[in-house]
Length: 122
Image (cartoon, rainbow, N blue to C red; front, side):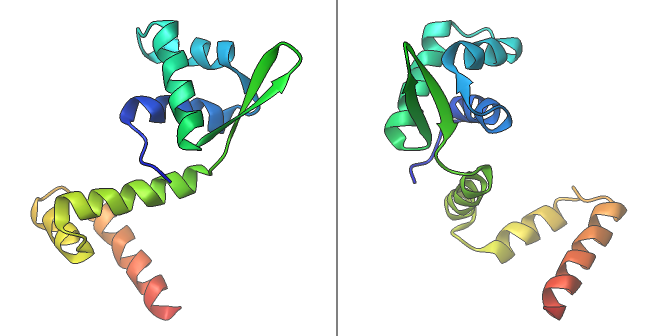
């Protein structure tokens, strides 16, 4: 799967939440959060179809769009790319960066401890 851009994520979030969906409906939803031109959104839709992330099916005179991959698959791929790009693929380095950056609240630390304990017990 090819990586998708931040702009393409906006389109995919709409498609994941409302599928099947027409291009006009995608445009209507994306414009609510952006000031993009409808042609820009059409371009993003075409790119996503070309990348194989979005599927188009012709129904009479219009196309309906469906996700070709799940949100979870895209998140997993983005996570791998982020980890590789920023931390040389090392989860430990990333986690250390977040922990040492004082970005975690006590509640977040407790949640991380629970996640690690659950993972350990499996």
